[in-house]
Image 1 (cartoon, helix red, strand yellow):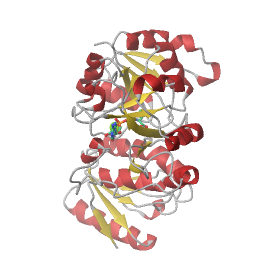
Image 2 (cartoon, protein in one colour; image 1 turned 60 degrees about the horizontal axis):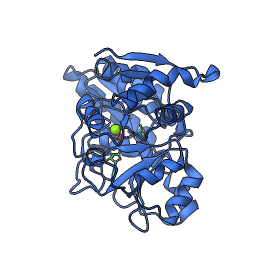
Image 3 (cartoon, protein in one colour; image 1 turned 90 degrees about the horizontal axis):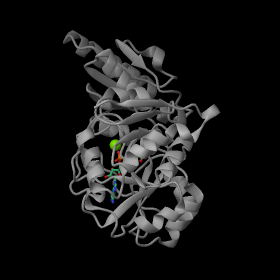
Image 4 (cartoon, helix red, strand yellow; image 1 turned 60 degrees about the vertical axis):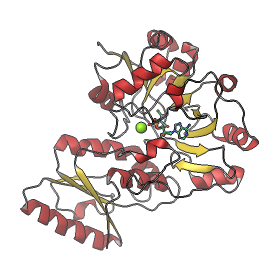
Length: 348
Ligand code: TXA
Ligand code: MG
């Protein structure tokens, strides 16, 4: 299949540039597009055949449901059967934005989209290209992250091109995404609501609007039994290299990682370190990548998936990663790092 790339420039933005992609969506085809979190791979959420194409293109297990993206609140009626008061408050505060709400589904949403669940995930993305594309298509758009299943989510068009070129109809290149990690997934069918995946809207921000939310035990991809959010049980967000987190006082972390680097070098392994700006110069590994300063967790969140992909480009065999404080967006950062490392943490 030929994949057409449409480059949009936000400074001189003409929504008409998106029309061929919007028409492809209406015809049941696949279009990758930027959102504020990561790139999504979109299809008509109410067309079972179109949605099945997403699963085939990504190699995604069919029991992992999709998020339905809307550009206008009036679309909700078609998608969900009811909206509790707390959900309404969250929509008013955080939409458009990186918050996905799980609500009871309407009868129009096919099983392919929700993996047979009686609930549906909905969000309104805060990205002008995404909103215009959805509006032009006249549809609600089901979209998982636009990566091959299991790989780190794409934060720029080149990531999408390397994973999905030749497998989908259009890729809209809108530059780098701002948040860099996926949306927060919040189950509104429970009261208090339950965070199923930490993300762009922090627990602290949610609680300011609706009071206590249940963070529960966020699955780390290793010890899960029956996760409520099916997607959380898979190995995810992973570079090809093996990854180990090292946690503790910062000088001890640097020393421990350098010892490990020497041990792996002795075994002829190419080593990588994911380090904060504060400590990066202390490492002796072959490839040291820095997603940002510990004082700027938003920057770290925005860069982390790009770093994981860069390690693969460098062909490292093993990545040692520092850990980050788990407040605010840090909870999402640590969730993704833990999953990428399949739960392997050394505490020093
Ligand atoms: O930021 C994002 O959310 C991005 C952009 C493209 O919007 N999308 C994204 O989609 O991350 P995906 O498919 O990679 O992750 C969706 C997550 C999965 O963990 C899935 O299991 C969960 O949402 N999910 C979807 N529908 C659900 C439902 N009805 N109940 C529980 N969890 C659900
Ligand atoms: Mg994903």
